[in-house]
Picture 1 (cartoon, one colour):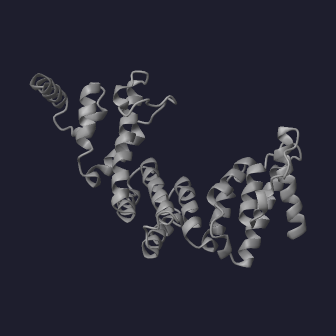
Picture 2 (cartoon, helix red, strand yellow):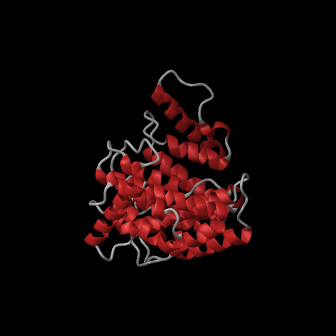
Picture 3 (cartoon, helix red, strand yellow):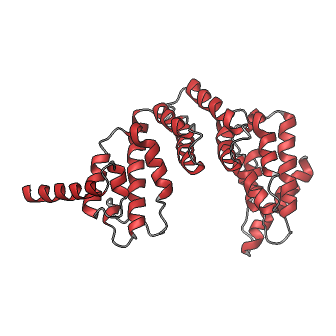
Length: 299
């Protein structure tokens, strides 16, 4: 054991000599770091204060993204020989991030949201770094108010929504970032407040299929009972206009939007046919047809 500890120490000293100003995260992503030392660094970083390294870890995750679709086969991705060195580093960073996020969540969803908001609120950070934090905020809000959790108070949820509200209406923020905020606000806020913005951002796109996908991404069918009659009609008219734009009567291109609308209006099976047609494509087209028939009868 003494011999092993000696060689670990020598290895660490060697790496430190390569960069005297490097901290453990820098060493973890250093391509000169051996797999064994990277594992030691991971174990050490698991014991550190997440709040002091969360932003830097988020930043490193964006600059060391995982390219391979294979993924690690063990809980020690730094040893995965089937992965490239870059992917081993990326997987190790992701594992470290997930380890700390879970620990904070287990302690307090509200504390985790507050930590992520400190990253997201850093307007000097790149969108990619802020998106990582935003995904965690969305997850914490979703599960924090779920019937299985309910660990977030109404006050805590409203506080977070109020803060995100400022960013989504800030035109100095990127469209991509605002697109990512909208679904959170539709799920936990007042959808009437965000419908016009969702339509405005969707209309920026010119490709009909892209517009369809964007619209059902940014307007998840939560809180549908909160819509005013006027906004409910506006939502449905816009959604069905989009559906008509992509429907060719054959291939069911508007299938996902049709089922999205079905969830919104609470139609059984989301307009899907009760019996599966003999041909695959006709199932998707039949769903679109059912949605359009419903609109003709109910608009």
